[in-house]
Each structure stands twice: as C-alpha cells, then as structure tokens.
Length: 213
Image 1 (tube, rainbow, N blue to C red):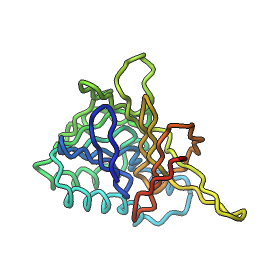
Image 2 (image 1 turned 90 degrees about the vertical axis):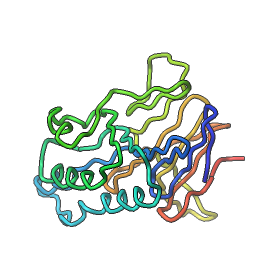
Image 3 (image 1 turned 180 degrees about the horizontal axis):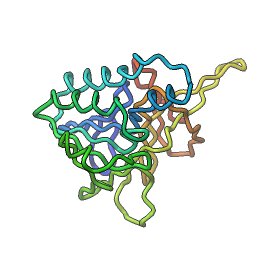
Image 4 (image 1 turned 60 degrees about the vertical axis):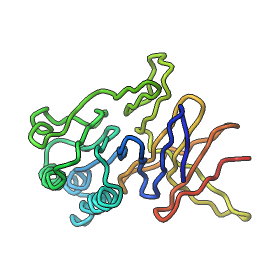
C-alpha cells in the first residue's frame, strides 16, 4: 500500500513500518525495547522470550528492504538501562552498512553514552524541505508536513452485528501523518477520523485502506 504526502511517496508495511524508497530509509515508531524486562521486574508475567519478537520482525524488514538508514520516531527504549539494551546493541551492530537514528521521545531517558556505544545518532527532529519527522506532534507552527508516532493510533471497525475489533493504523490528514506503534506491547489510542482523513489498518499480514468514502 502506498501513500503520497508533501510530494513524497511512502510504502505502508503490514509490519507497522514506513518505507521511504526514494531515500532508502525505513521508519518505525515506538519500539519500546526494555518494556518486557520492566514489566517482569514489577511482577507482570510476560515470557522473557517475548522480548525478541520485535527484533526478529525488524531484522526481517532490514534484510528484505535493504535500507541505507533506519529512523526510530521516538520511544526506542521504554525504561532505564537493562539487559535488553545490550541485546539491541548487538543486534544493530550486525548491520554495518545501515545508519540508525533516534528521534528522541519521552521514554528515551538513557544516558547519551549508551547510544554512542552503538553508533546511534540522536536528534529531536529530522527536517527536510517539506517534511518534519518528530516523536510527538509538532506545535511550532511549522508549515512542514509532520510525521510522528507517540499516540499508538488505532481505529475500531464494526461488523454488521454488534461485533467490533480494534486495529493499529496509519493515519494521514492534511497537515500530519501518524505511525502505528511497532511494539507488540502497546495499547491503542482510538481515533475518530474526519472527512478527508486517510486511514490504513494493519493486520500484520496486509495493510487495508478503510478510509470513509
């Protein structure tokens, strides 16, 4: 599935990632590494093996699409330093030809030296001629098209009966676009699209345009 915003075309991937082919850049948001270790430390029973699931997914995306860069739109790491950070560092070290950049989010509280050890660039935003990539929505009054994450967008789809399902989604309106959370362990903020907004749900196997006609 493809969408064009601010004259740029992006591929919407069912794995809840954005591919900017012309720039050879893979963009994901809200990976929340370390969340499983954080939960287990606080007595929440999540299997420790689950922490590898999103890295396996990310590895498949990198191998398939061969990006030159990977951008994380914030909340790369969920909490303070723990073992999952070292696992992630070893993971990205295997991709010597890929440049990793973190657009800092509210959960990214690790000390700078942790990012430097694994050559991860950090920045509050990435700005091009027409686009502005951030973690949270930009409130500066910029006329750039703002692409961000943070809210873990989703929509509720209703059947003919009373059944309904909540699914993560990509959401695009006139001034901004929102990426779904890449992490499996996040809730969803259910959006109420307005006329003219474009909504694409992901089922992990496909991306479906559910924009109201």
